[in-house]
Length: 148
Image: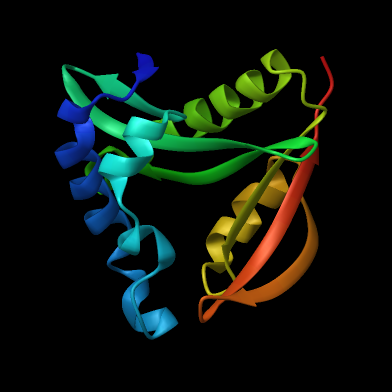
């Protein structure tokens, strides 16, 4: 079940972030960007949705309106719930939200060291648009053009 996140979900979101992104610290050489975010602030601002399964938050997504496209700012699934299709559900939800808001495209970025994410997004129809270094993080930006 997908629903907007509330302040009661922040602890679960933070736990998922820590578990999902900690394996990348060594590869990147520092904490990935999502581990540095203020999720209380994100939830208060809106655009955060959680995926519940069996009464527990198993994943979440952070979406932001930008110029001409919806930004998929962050997506994570609890490591013990990975492989159950929750990531695909979250991605499909993001694309539905983009279309529902009248956007013709959805954008995202990931750390270039997270090569498996780049492969996954490419398989889902995202195309790399550019690379940039921001806040000391080397990011790969990707866009998917949507059709109703």
